[in-house]
Image (cartoon, rainbow, N blue to C red; front, side, top):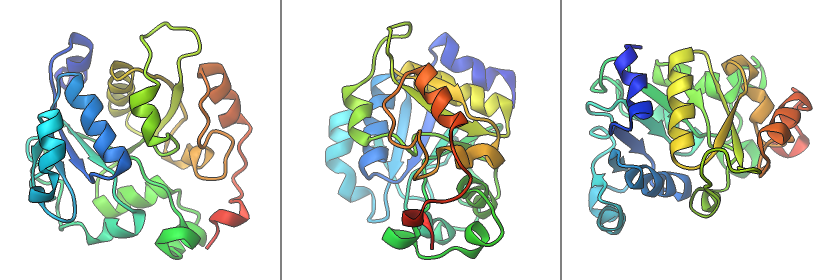
Length: 234
């Protein structure tokens, strides 16, 4: 990734961010990232005309799914896991050079997504599977965060007890960029390793839904078991 991309957050320069998915997490990330000064385009499956209220509230630009990644430095994919293969082919093609993809997803086989053999039988982590579907590596973040916390729990850097979020990814520069973005919107982060380690933050693990600080999140990641709990097996 070119250095100027991941230097932008440190210098406070706005980035172009495309968000695919305007549900609870996507909507609140739109709110927080526009408030931080970024140029946000947001899309959902129902079309941009359904996003007028969010656009008026935040100043984000409502677009189609195909348009959301256009010239984006960061693309956030926050749609149900089962819908990822239905995204337009080459959806990420118009993104800016050196772009980063954030995957906020979880695999809910019983509750929503149905059984995905590559995850259940081949042992792919959820985000490794997402990366394969998208044809681009991803950074896993926000998957175990309550959407309301994005609005209600931000704190300035250095505040004792500041909530921390685990971040996993294979691309060091992309992961650094995502961690800086998360710091900007009011949260600490913990490096949770590569995508093959990202099972440590999947549903049913100690860190999933944890409102802990860096020390607590670090311990929860270490305490995780790779065995999926019964609730999250297909």
